[in-house]
Image: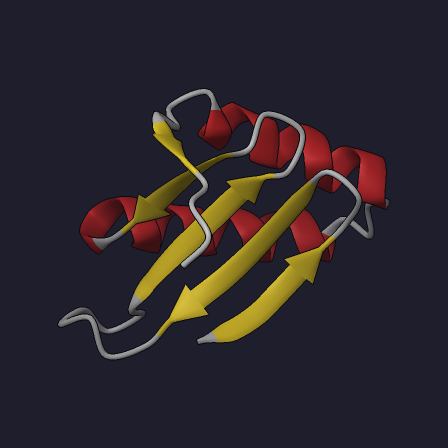
Length: 81
């Protein structure tokens, strides 16, 4: 697992070796305490979108806005083990 992004509102981790070329991505919405895991084609789409976003030299607010679109799908509460 690699931490890719960590702000006051969101954390994004990449999980390698999940049977897909890019692995999967876990997005945690710290405010709502929910998470979503992206794999397969959705993970590939997410990675391509992030690469385009980073190319635009955006700030933390823009990245958090981008991530919030994905976390609207999040239904799993964050559980500490």
